[in-house]
Amino acid sequence: MLSYQQPDAAGHFGPYGGSFASETLTHALTELREAYARYQNDPEFLAEFHSELKHFVGRPSPVYHAARMSREMGGAQIYLKREDLNHTGAHKINNVIGQAMLARRMGKPRIIAETGAGQHGVATATICARYGLECVVYMGSEDIKRQSPNVYRMKLLGATVVAVDSGSKTLKDALNEAMRDWVAHVDDTFYIIGTVAGPHPYPMMVRDFQSVIGTECLTQMPELLAERSAEARQPDAVVACVGGGSNAMGIFHPYIPYEKTRLIGVEAAGEGLDSGKHSASLQRGSSGVLHGNRTFILQDENGQITETHSISAGLDYPGVGPEHAWLQEIGRAEYVGVTDAEALAAFHYLCRTEGIIPALESSHAVAYAMQLAKTMPADQSILVNLSGRGDKDIGTVADLSGADVYDRPSMRGHGVKGGPAA
Image (cartoon, rainbow, N blue to C red; front, side):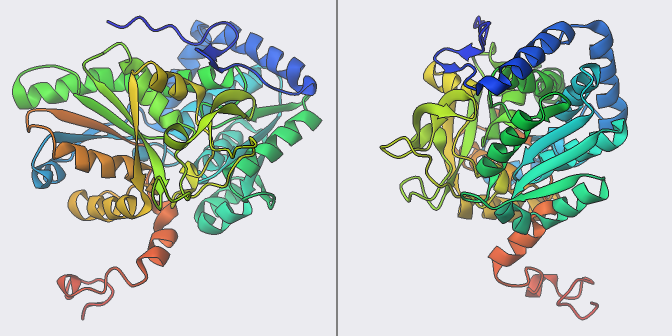
């Protein structure tokens, strides 16, 4: 089995990662590293963490065999890790609980966060309500428009949502503003980063908290596959969407030693990888420093960050977690692109075939799994991390569909809009 020990003591995944932060944050990052080193293997801390995951989040999340989808694809069997069933509707809550527990132990009563799709913001607001912590969430004004249900959820939970109007008004800019806030309030503020990016120890820490996803799958998949073939084994491929990359690292990391299992990250190809309107940092980016770490980023010849595009707010980011850059470099993981149109088609397909409404982020992974399944035999399996549910995206999907999706002859007479019983 592959020997994989990353990152090193300075937070480097090969040449990526590290800590590139202003001098004003040096003390705060040192304090955070020391606190995480103290508690990451502390039995009392871990017992509380797993208790919260079980009783508050509802873990373990199930793995579901998408039998109809698999049949219609005509190839490999597709399984979905149902992170969409977590409390708050996505994988984000796993990491937020761990960081909020750390904040309490460090005596930090004020929490700040950044969010794109809003799921990390909702998760942060949720745990702050539970623990009685002040919560401020930074969100690009463009994302606020397309994720209004999650904005209202955050406010219901008591969070202050700060609209960011600079730059592209998306996730990158929200992260910039959150960093500025942290610099100004280091004494009483804990910054909960939502993805496996940022200065060390964030990429490692977020990965560790999210690894509960893959760890559960290591037990669940052999049990499920044994029911079909009497052979207990791991999946042939694990597929997850990649923006910053926390849901992907959460399911990839425990599988890294299992070399027979392909790890496939799906980036947002937007309008096409060669269109200039995408968020595919690993496939079209180059090495550079962004938000406190060295990784692959989308930049011009002068090193300026270029604007990104994706149908999904959570993937609309010009960088990626440094561990993903390293996994690509050593060949342990592969990264592909799925366009807006393909993701939207997969969104509708999963709704209609399995009765599951996925997040647009997760729809990218579903789309690629559908393509991949057709190239594999029926006795092989693909595990997809269904990282979030799509309630938040209904408005976006309706706008993009350009018509009432229910106003079709096949739906008439079934008590839905457009039919005589409506």
